Amino acid sequence: MATLESKLIKQDVTTLRQAYQLRKREYDALRAAGEWTGAVLHAGVLLELALKIAICKNMDVTRLPKAFQVHELEYLLYCSSLENAFLNNAKLYRNFRVIATNWSMELRYEGTIVTAQDADSFHQALFDSTDGVLTFLSSFL
Image (cartoon, rainbow, N blue to C red):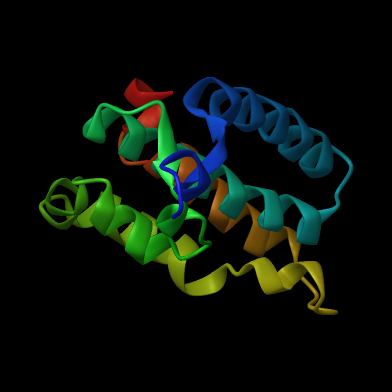
């Protein structure tokens, strides 16, 4: 019989926060170096980690069930209990959609060419001072 431990991801919320901070430093370095594809890949990972941290907070748990070991941003937003907050703010939701519709972990393997303009669009969607997705989620980080 499987134990609860076997049904939880290994990383606790502290580790997820540390991973977020590390990926953020890498994201900043990739943008500074003009490595647009890497920056966009990291942008999506930042959002994924932020949503997983929000789920931990809203579920009041330190570790997530393995069901959350996914890279599907729409699913993670829904599970975070924050979907209505996004839907009720058109700019915030539009910014979320910029990332959710244009990002995939498949960027790791694809030869996709990402331009500086694409990367800037992702950056604005995440870090806009009033309606950026990560700006909104910062209270969870």
